[in-house]
Image 1 (cartoon, rainbow, N blue to C red):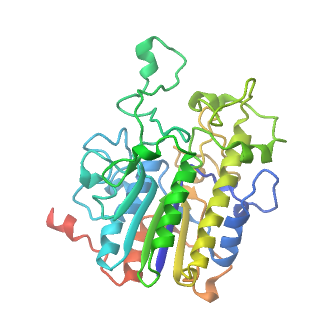
Image 2: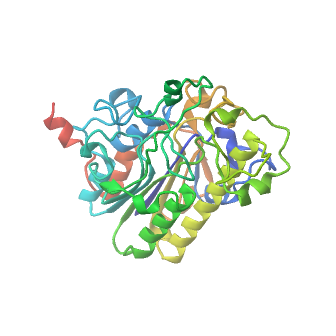
Image 3: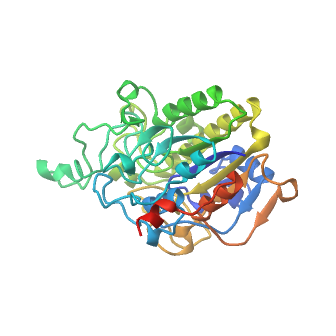
Length: 373
């Protein structure tokens, strides 16, 4: 089948409608909720407690402890997925898939082998760091610019960039796209191009790793205004969010939960747009959609405004709220008898590697790692 793999960033268990027992005015995810009703709700889908461990696990098919659990900076040679492991896209390429990566990589970039192209993706558009600015794509957290403000005598604890832009297409910078739009819309344009130019007779593997809902909590005004009623809130997310809209009006007040909810609602619209295009292209009936968050939602207001209720803890912790992700499988490839069901069995994100290899008719055995001993 065609495969659309959605790995969402910092999405909390309670930040989606399908994990809530009753409708909520705060949480508006109608497209995701509809996909769950058409698919299988994965109630016990587990990931690592932070971004990199999960992303390495997805690309390598290994538990994070056997691959990588941290990524201080993607530029460091020992960060990211070890080079002597075969990437998921390499396995699916062997099966004849056209493979594309869009979004947040966070699996290393010290050498070309560490990058999406080096891992078997025939095309890529995204960023390497933990985060960048949604509006400018400027980096403000890396070995090049971490705590740069301290060098200028600043003591407010915020990150400042060195005018480094973190947006890359294939093997080079995507300079023509820098600052042209909100980042998630740049990614949507690329995904649209991939779908519209793809031959449905050939299997497609599209890995989309949205920036949403990771900080900075930035979002277009038309989505922010939908949650204008949310004003009983704190503004501590300012610590990692320099501005919300492309240009905040004078006197603009930060409302962290409002910003976060608007971002998730916007992502829901994007997912609805993508699935509609796949249906129109005639690819939906033979497609498996995998959806999961990379970790629990961050609960520190200095960073985000997620909720994992009723689970305990959040991102960075090993309680359920940190490692049990919002997840489901959907699409026409889901057997009719399983649609609209809920699965309680434990699944780890690493399991998808062998599962997709099996569906593609190829072996999941990592021959590259075996040769390396």
